Length: 440
Image 1 (cartoon, rainbow, N blue to C red):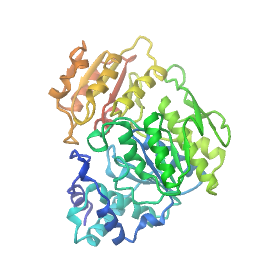
Image 2 (image 1 turned 120 degrees about the horizontal axis):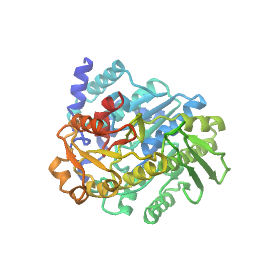
Image 3 (image 1 turned 60 degrees about the vertical axis):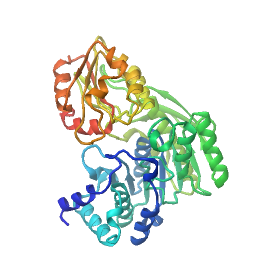
């Protein structure tokens, strides 16, 4: 296949990032069958498996940065991508090359010829990631769960450490309507006898994780009991930016205050989880020095997570997509991006199956101007009629609508003064669509 033919084959599969999934859509038998045909590459990798309602991508990036700084060759599997699909499969921060991706997709199509039409987009992508990491001989693979955990396509591995970063309401049509139900699905990644690090705070969700670990004989390292953190917010603007700092205390030691390359208290919490995982790896006999931990956290880069892409006006690119991440966003804006007489302008679009009303209730009062829009790269996008029906928008004094995200960006940019802040958020798909424009 050519690259174009490979993309047509891959994107022609059922894709639950575009088609809204239902609870019965997920199972692991196809994935296990495919990997068996490929020689079970996941069994030849040292994996850290990371789930969570939010924070799993950032935590994955932080841990990968720590391990790479130590000198290891590190594979990173995440989803979805912002702009190019190759971003999902990286080694030492370099996305998979197009020719490598094409060759692996060709191999998968040929080896699964008898049932290839049954495979989903994410199943094939996961298999590509495992194969690529084995072929390129990574020392470690950091694998982010796609959705949930128990029936997620990635849940075919036996990791060195399993991680659950947080539990909040998201994908309730698949994972359940209570935090305990959601925690049960996330806890599905816990494997017998393998250690677990949890950053979960909610009491009922913690109880589910504790019970699962007890049933499976897995040692549990928990936020608030086995590790803690204190956060010094970043300060953006003025003569010079001040980065975020985090001080972490574990049952093993007290770490010195360390800079974190991502903004927000929630990222300090993710950094603490990454350090707790690093300690578990050290206990497993894997050398990781203090300087690698400190430099890895300081140097981490993870696009569209409160990413400053322009100045005067400040342009912040984010992909908050549920109520908890919306709360983290506005807290970080208040703490780290104060405005001296400027205004905050919001460009917003979201998938229709998200708690849009809850997100807007959190965010709308914090912005003087709102630019509602849609994105074209995912059919699950909420329509403008849907967005404008929510009470926080109905009551807002300055809200405009735009059929195309580029038009919303152009309007906000034209309205903004040098002292203002433009925040683009609501979905990773909006962030990916506008990043090439906003970052110019």
